Length: 364
Image 1 (cartoon, helix red, strand yellow):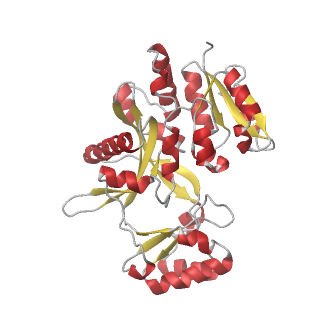
Image 2 (cartoon, helix red, strand yellow):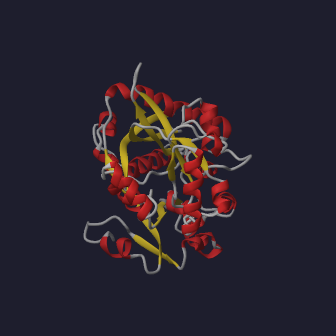
Image 3 (spheres, helix red, strand yellow):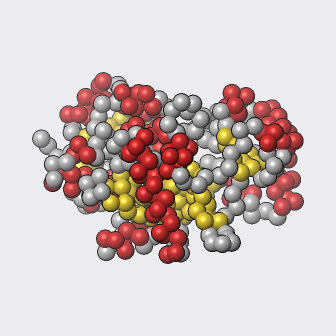
């Protein structure tokens, strides 16, 4: 059998995947939509010992990856597919990802849907955290129960994967912002019914980007980062009266990612972070065997004491993270003696699995 080609769709963190694969001696293939291909087909295309994208596969729409024609090409090229958030968003069909996309995938494909909230009888991130006994923000099942600063996590009407979240501190304010949002077309009544209302936790936001290896049975912290989000970053820099005036006059705050920033944490926070990561891994093994394979992120708030600082998880990313800058943090270097990107750590795991004839442990 030919050596695998590491494959990813051209969005989110494709370059991170490709650079890591190239560094470990793999060929790379990026699936791109026509008209949005230059990043991969031109600027970072492999040529003269530069770049990391060896081959491009064009599709009209990313959802075409589910077609028999595209899947046949990927199988002929012996591709191992690396999923990330954009893959989930553009396919927008977890049943299809699990049952119709028959290309070998790095990681547990059944875990991807757990990123979504409100899956009814399905297993979402809250059920995993409940099983793991991981602390997350208090929820309000009924908006009438809101008695503190809270965030309503609701998706946008136009782009069903972006957030139209809004902040409230009472039921009265909830009704006011609900009507304003519906009138503006920020979200629909149906989306609001599926929303989650959580206590807004004040603290320092840190994303812990872990890697669990089924080969070595070891949990590793590859890096830590925080997010920067469109006009939210500008609004919160305004003084409070201007923040309020902006929201009344101009409209909603946007919570869509624009960039990520590498951060570090106090070493005293590493042990509790690892404990949470280990509990998450064990819970996924129980609920969705074989559990976590490879990368996952826990988005957290570090809150103050007394008696001591605590870590509260407010979101889970059960797949490849979207923050290539985590290689600038020191944690992989502490472990390996060199800084690793998540893309390279994934490639190392595939390389080790090939050498030990244990690919079945890391692919689904």
